[in-house]
Length: 281
Image (cartoon, rainbow, N blue to C red; front, side, top):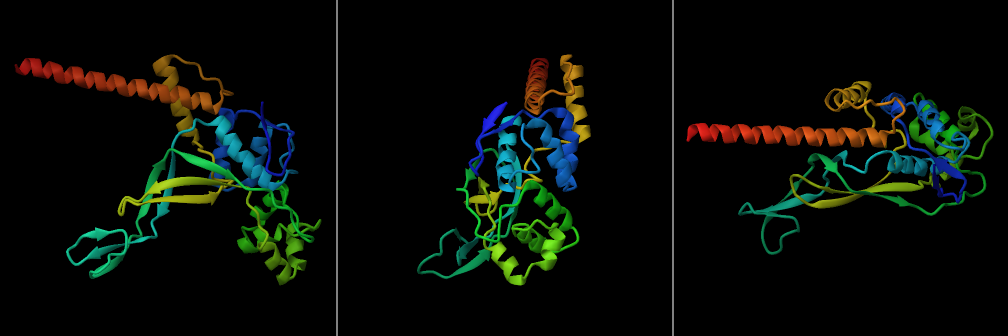
């Protein structure tokens, strides 16, 4: 098991590599935003009670699960370029405001879909809460996610920081507007993921930092995709894939299979082209 140190200073946490037999649960938990299923699925792979731990410790823990259980490969991101560029009267494009000439400012606004290979997890220093507030637990977050389906999401996500032993819906009912406003000022995020993107229209590079989305961070696969991977390995390589194989190993094996298949296809294409050349001669 991998020993990890959490942002709150907790040092007793161990995690194991996630196995392929829970991919279906993780896929459904992320696709349908089911926090209780997500947490209960990960509970198998750690030595601590997840529901009672701090939410922001859990956010960091999700990043460590990803690093320990998935190959460090690319991710798909969708983002919109918000910076303008400038076009002068000769039609030349400029990315800095031109001096001494007339120009038109053009908003880029391109919605980019991009594969990003490198990323960095940035951990923030743990922040104590003032009187009247407390760090929410994972259980409180689960309650908040479920309540947010019928109540204003911002209100619920701020309200879970109020120091109260009442159920979250009653806490919100009895909380004053000032208490909720004060809680909003102390919302804390333990870690963010930093990525670098390049716009496909204006070609400028941007760095983005976003909080790790607990219910959207893992690279999950549907049942069909998982069955196709195991079928590929069994039919082409004669490899028996056990249900409890680690995700890391399964994805590595399948990646190697795809590379071998592509190299073989390329070799056949080259041989076919060479034979045509000889016949033509």
